Every structure is written in structure tokens, then in C-alpha cells.
Image 1 (cartoon, helix red, strand yellow):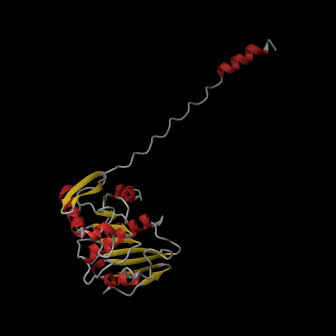
Image 2: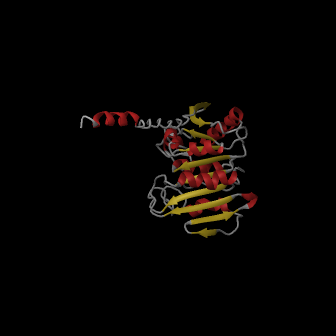
Image 3: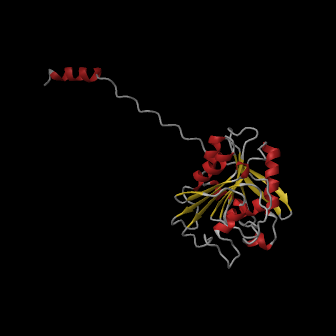
Length: 270
């Protein structure tokens, strides 16, 4: 054994050293928190979080994401629109409603009680971002949930300069005789007991079919694929309705990507 020990020590000394551990993978870049844009309105200072990725050059599309009643701009920013916007060169804005509400005519809260001109606020915000960031005024989209979805309908019904709206769990809450010629991608859940597909006559909220009726006037007969119905309309615009079986009054997991591909990327010319 004594004779073997020097040999073993020699072999151990000649053995290759173990490989060095791989360096840790670099952490992914932190998401851009955006900048706060403040506008002075008759009802006071109004704020929005605006994210302009480096990929968004002059003439980039603009997407406004509107929270539901009691919600916040920060909550809507957490839905995953910013990574898609960074990928595709789109500016995103997350406006904050007064006391967490929007005046969509028949809903909701203090915004309605105080007669807040939210159409005027959103229009002014777009004009500011056109001047400030050079976004394309002809490629402006409004996406919203619940009260925010109602607000997107109201904005379009007021003739707002929108290319498209993406209402999720929303309804018309007032008349809409001559809406802007917008593309629409509307999502509704069969288990939504707050904004029901069949409407809420007790609150003056239209059914989904009645809500979409002003926007599909003059469009071709719809084509249906599973739960998705679509209309081809004059001027190259489209209206799409998706019924989500079993979906309650919440933001569907698939909604962000579906709206992005169907509405924004489907009509930006990208």
C-alpha cells in the first residue's frame, strides 16, 4: 500500500480539473415602468402611464388600455401589453379614471355623477401624445375591461378618431346612432353575471348583439368559426365577436394576445 500511495498521488495531480461553473444567465431587462403624463382638465389633473419602447419610431400606433370600475392604470399595465408593444413598436398608454371610474353614459360611479367628460379627456390625451411622441393619429386603439370596455364603446359612438376598439366584458350604455367607422374585437363570457350577454335592462345596458348592431350596419353577412363570429365591413374594417364558454366577469387569460393579433396587429399595417 505504501508503494501505491505515491502513484495514486501522482495520478490525482495529473487528473483534469473539474470544469468551472457556468456564469449565471443575465437577468432579463426590467420592464419599462413608463412615464406619467398629466393633463389639466376641468375636473382636475388627469394622469396616464405612457410607455414608449425604443422600437416605436415616428408614426407608431398607440394603444390605450382602460381599466374597469374601481380599477387602476397599474393593474391594466400588468396584463402583458407592454412586451407585445416592445416587440412590435407600439406606444401604450394606461389612463386613470376619476376615482377609478369612467363616464360611459350609463356607468359608472362618480365619473357619471359628476358628469366628467371622459371622451374629451381621452381625446386630449391622444392629441398630447401625437404632439409629444409623434404617434400616428390614424392608428389609435382603445382596449378596455368592463367599465373601460363601455368607455371604448362610448368613445367610438361619439365619433372619436379611433381605428379600433377591443371591449372585454362591456356593453353599450346609451344611444349610438352614428359610431365612428372602427374595427371592433369584442369578448364576452357566458358566465358573466355582471355584464351579461343578454344585457341588463334594469340598468339600461344593451345585449351583446344590440351593442354590436351599430358597428356591423352595412357590413357583409357574418362568418362563424366555433365561438368566433366575424363581419367584413366597408373600408377594410372588421368586427369580431368571441363568446367564451364559462368565462365570468374577469379578464380572460387569452384576451391580451387575442386582441393584440386580431385588432392591433391586424390593422396597423405592420
